[in-house]
Image 1 (cartoon, rainbow, N blue to C red):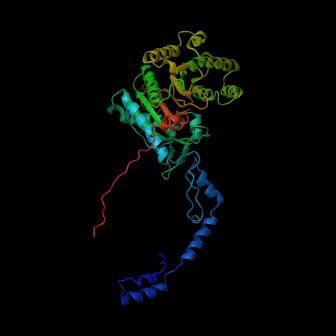
Image 2 (cartoon, one colour; image 1 turned 90 degrees about the vertical axis):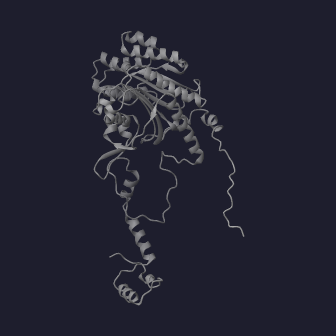
Image 3 (tube, rainbow, N blue to C red; image 1 turned 135 degrees about the vertical axis):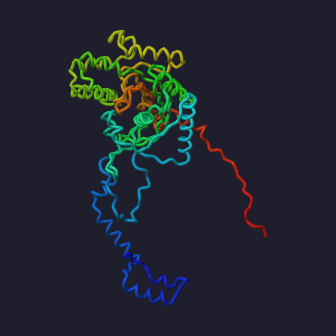
Length: 426
């Protein structure tokens, strides 16, 4: 039976009755009575007996089974008032900046005829590990829920979009032009502009096989930059194609199954020493000759040089030439440049890939994207041509001059509101 801390309080209730008094006096001898001080001591004693290992599991359980929280904690212990490492609070001034960015994301997307969608923050773990690549797998916030299902906080939005397209099936008409702004989670090493949670702006075109789709996506990002006062002297785009890398591997009879792993390694160029890159490439069955030729190709910075090395019949060259021609037509050729080393770390890209970068070279990629024509089929759908990009919110505010550029637009407008008196007049 539940303990009553002070049964006698009922006797003093305004519905006092003599019979109730007798009953309560009887109960007082039968029910356990705990004083507040005894309750506090027992709670503290239980808290201190909780094993350190259990508490560590609760605090640091990034992946694996979800640990149960301790049943009792010391209520007198001070709580760390800082947000978890790699996450952020949004006080009013930061919220104004975030809302301003999101407003521009939405307005640019709608200007190009895209419709907004969203997906669950929590998804099946399999959605992200099937075709994402080793790096994403290592960075997942994943666990087993109480229904014994493996789930994960989404590290990106594209797999969720692919799942939704498959789910909708023939109820939607192609092409689709969708955009999303959602929170993503990755347990990665934090650097300037990199956090463990961030908001990401995605724009995706489903059902268009031509390079015109990539050209439109890059144009939309440039439109956003121009709206917030960033020019081609501040940022640019490095463009390449996964098909360049495929051609080199084909010449050395490297199995297609190793392609994704090679891309993840190449994506580390400029992040780790070149000798480490060579060792990692040779560890996935590439010969020393193949590694040397691959690195030579990846150092190429012009389409003319690429054509000299690979020949004019390579499919990647035709796609890239068309993209640069469209950039000239759309008026943003000064924003983009060819760089064969750009492959992107995600395994599902199949064609043209691109990254936004700051000209000063102080930050990692501002944004990135490309073509992923076979992603939907890996989830059980049909092969549908698709391309898109992801643009994180944390990096853009680090771009040189951004706070200065935005500051004049984010001032709070002060005004006075008068309310009529609600105090009755005498």
